[in-house]
Image (cartoon, rainbow, N blue to C red; front, top):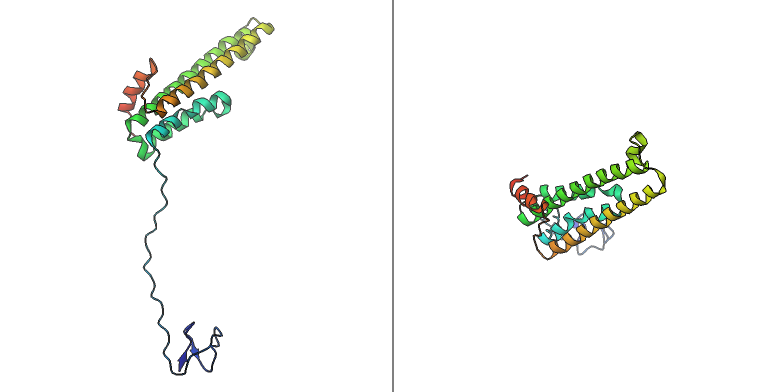
Amino acid sequence: MAFCAQCGASVQGQFCAACGAATPSAGSSPPPRPQPQPQQQQQAPSMPDLQPNIVAVLCYIGLIISGFFWPLSVIAFVVPIVFLVVEPYKNVPFIRFHAVQSLLLSIVFFFVTLIAGAIIGSMTGFGFGAFGFGGFGGFGGYGLYFALAFLLIIIRIGCGAFLMSKAYVNQKFEIPGIGELASSLADQIKF
């Protein structure tokens, strides 16, 4: 009995009924079947490790974004927390310091903005002034409100850009008051 050289099926005649290939002379043995190759363990592609200075820069990106678009202010809190928790980065003291300092600075800006908004809002009739705390009213207060809001945005973006530039060149710049606390907390925090 002849076997097809292409598919290995038994052949009667000059052509294989299964695949249509021409057959060699009668009485040939079937071709050897290919041996299955052992499957190698495929590892999931891992995320490339970023350099510590790039991760430190990313910790401050939320300050810049929240300065331009306040509804995304949550990024200023989420990004540093992610780098304090994610495995390859949480063990690097340089990254932990910048993540904690960025987090503390975001908290400070949040409360300064909240307090300034309440004070100016009570003077102009915005915010708390609408709830009976009185206020100076008039259009002069609105200008003060918007000028202070613009000043806080500029300060936030400026601080973020300055700290990003220091982190990029691998400098551990400590903001007075916040930096010392960030250093001590970064040494104590271990997730």
